[in-house]
Length: 220
Image (cartoon, rainbow, N blue to C red; front, side):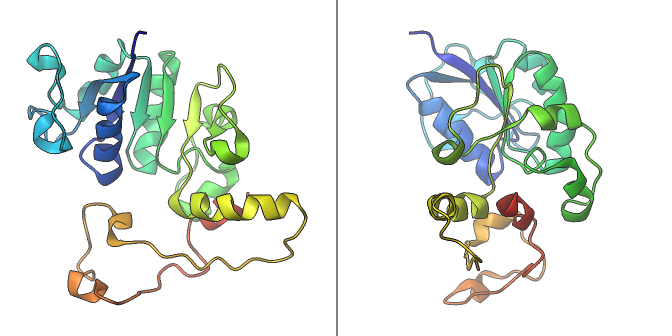
């Protein structure tokens, strides 16, 4: 069976590096390319934590982000591990090439009217937003054939909806309070000046209470 060729854009972040490793080691997928300005030119093996056997050094090294579209021409699918605003600009370009696109960011999860309030920008690709399948298969099933775009759910919505959806469908929910925790990796690789590892030991710091951007995603 031929393997599907998948590219990962933004492979040096937490989500991107894990995604690239999963693609590279999957029996039915091959990591066609992975982009990272920080790691450009480095071998996949040096950063993904696994040995990747590929023919030709050009196909086993990280490439700059700017070259993603060129490398995507020979791919079946592209996975965007980029920020919401970056994904907003990139996804239409890959989708118009006829590639299956999976976006890890929140750029294609909500109704367009929600983005100025929760993400701080106007949504500039409403046509692709309308076609995006919300990728929580346990609740919404597999993407329909020809969907083209899959919006990967956020971490809190995934944890919350998997537990709440059966209750909601049974009509057993009147009101909900979601009390969720995450580790420091939720902030990505770069922490701000107010975050110190010593503060995380046996401690919990509340943040974005009643204004977390995953709230409208869960409600929707």
